[in-house]
Amino acid sequence: MAVRADTADVVVVGLGPGGEEAAGRLAEAGLDVVGVEEGLVGGECPYYGCIPSKIMVRSAGLLAEGRRITGHAGTAMVHPEWRPVTRAVRKATADWDDKIAVERLIGRGVRFLRGTGRLTARDEVTVADVDGNETAVRARQAVVLAVGSEPAVPPIPGLARTPYWTNREAIRVEEVPGSLLVIGGGSIGLELGQVFCRFGTAVTVVEGMQRLLPREEPEAHELLLKVLTDNGIEVHTSARVGAVDYEEGAGFTLYCDRGERLVAERLLVATGRRSDLAKVGALAVDVDAEAPALPVDERLRVAPPVSGRPGIWALGDVTGKGAYTHVSMYQADVVVRGILGEGGPPAAYHAVPRVTFTDPEIGAVGLTEWEARERGLAVRTGLVDLSTSARGTTHQIGNDGFVKLVADMLSGVLVGGTTAGPYGGEVLGALSVAVHARVPLAVLREQIWAYPTFHRAIGDALRQIK
Ligand SMILES: Cc1cc2nc3c(=O)[nH]c(=O)nc-3n(C[C@H](O)[C@H](O)[C@H](O)COP(=O)(O)OP(=O)(O)OC[C@H]3O[C@@H](n4cnc5c(N)ncnc54)[C@H](O)[C@@H]3O)c2cc1C
Ligand SMILES: NC(=O)c1ccc[n+]([C@@H]2O[C@H](COP(=O)([O-])OP(=O)(O)OC[C@H]3O[C@@H](n4cnc5c(N)ncnc54)[C@H](O)[C@@H]3O)[C@@H](O)[C@H]2O)c1
Image (cartoon, rainbow, N blue to C red):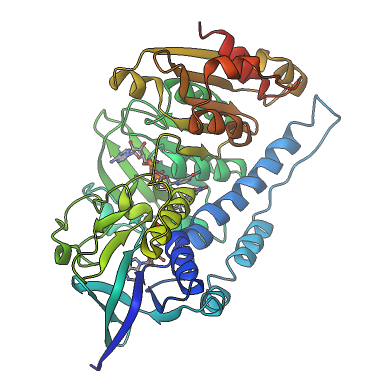
């Protein structure tokens, strides 16, 4: 094993969306930056997450729209074919090759090291490559930990011995299975579950909590339960999986505590994410390696720079502030400004937007009604059914959805909201601005909302907030 020593102004460990952005911008600003990545430069989002999954969602959406033609605009026979989806995913991921991403990074001035980075001292990252060679890089100014997350697989008896899928295998699948069990009714389980269902797979979703998307509004659960069940997906909520079995040819069997015995060809485990703090050497900065996330202050510092010693920053999924690409990119900006000493506002999370790309899409921003009540706010809500709105009426089939607003009457602003329905993620834009900028309710009520749009329902919901 060879050991090499190096120094740099900044070492960025993990080059997902946020790490890549931070490394690139810091190098462009003239700092000597070493970027360390053990997998693919770009991270989960472009290769196994947002991009390929949304390609699949789009293809599945086309099938659904095709099937809606009959009875509304003529007749249509829809024959699903998975091959074009595989082709599009392979193209978008460059066949899971990051050559272009590495070139782009180097082009921005970053020195790239492929390997696993670990904090071995407060100012040192040791990078081990696949051959076991190590490079100890001493950071003069900063270390940025942007190591993201990986699937959290629950300790269900029998599961570890089976060839279950996580998002990684599901994204790379070459043929749709005849049947699929999904453990977890969150964003991944529902987006991919609906995709496979639309391509002909018999899908069963098993969710441990009482509701699908349990962190969102209960109305989102009710809507998705109705629509997904209508699509033919079998949904089990409040279901605890006691054991998993797998037999070649027979497939997977889930034994649930209430006695259900669920069988399918494939099993997708989509039960959230975890970050491996031990692997990145969190102990070197006195962080418990078993902690769920790296603790950061409002400037994303795990440890501020002190008396000539570099500061340790973190960003992205590993900070536990919302596992979304847009959060990681937002935090990258705060980190870059912090390292360059540019000042500017600290990180704020009162208006984190999120979209689950099911059909209907579930867009949400800020607090849910329950979260607002938990915080003791003077809560009033407005709720409008999209299907009965003017746009819902003209849209006809596929018009399920709602707009829900959560207001705090003391501060007189919206603190959260949900826009569920066709283009729910796009409609969310208007609400995101209102929650982010704390636009007074009085000002929002004066707004003219174009007719007949889905976002006009925001104006209708506002009128319910007295
Ligand atoms: C199926 C799926 C769909 C998703 N869809 C969306 C979506 O539509 N919209 C959205 O906003 N978000 C979506 N997400 C979430 C999004 O992908 C993540 O929030 C985002 O990728 C996190 O970015 P990150 O910068 O934290 O790092 P990650 O993308 O997690 O990347 C971290 C990188 O660090 C590397 N790494 C880890 N440890 C080390 C180490 N010790 N040394 C060197 N390298 C290391 C990893 O190999 C990885 O490349 C989705 C996720 C999944 C799984
Ligand atoms: N459109 C998007 O922005 C998008 C899409 C996919 C993923 N993501 C990100 O990736 C993260 C991970 O997605 P995810 O769907 O895996 O996580 P999630 O946290 O969104 O959902 C996981 C679900 O699994 C359930 N669960 C956990 N353990 C279980 C068990 N043993 N049995 C049954 N159910 C169980 C949870 O109650 C939860 O509803 C998301 O939180 C999100 O931040 C975002």
